[in-house]
Amino acid sequence: MSKKIEQFEDLQLWKNASAVAVEIYKLSEIGKLKNDFGMKDQIRRSAASISNNIAEGFEYNNNLNFIRFLHYAKGSAGELRNQLFLLKETELISSETYHTLYENLLDLSKQISGFIKYLKEFEQQKKQSITKN
Image (cartoon, rainbow, N blue to C red):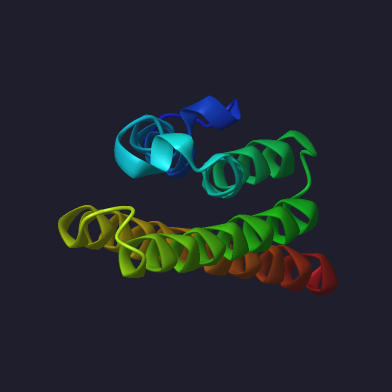
């Protein structure tokens, strides 16, 4: 039996998104990136936005709103992937760091997409059962 999700901190998706944000915060404090305040701020905002949107959407306690915020989270994951590409190309981060984070973010985007699909199907089933009654 699976544990009931009562708060966003119970969501594995939120935990994974938060872990990416922590990695980005740590990364932004080392090497050449440490002193690039503009990009440092941008990647931190993008990274935090992923878990922030998951948390905010959950708190509305409404699946349709949650789905909207999950789309925002997925968009932020894409934005962060783009920023990491730029950092790799300008040699502010290593190719290894880029590829590791890129794969983590791709996986996170897939998780978000899967959760969106699950919630949409759940809402569709709910609608169908209401119309049958």
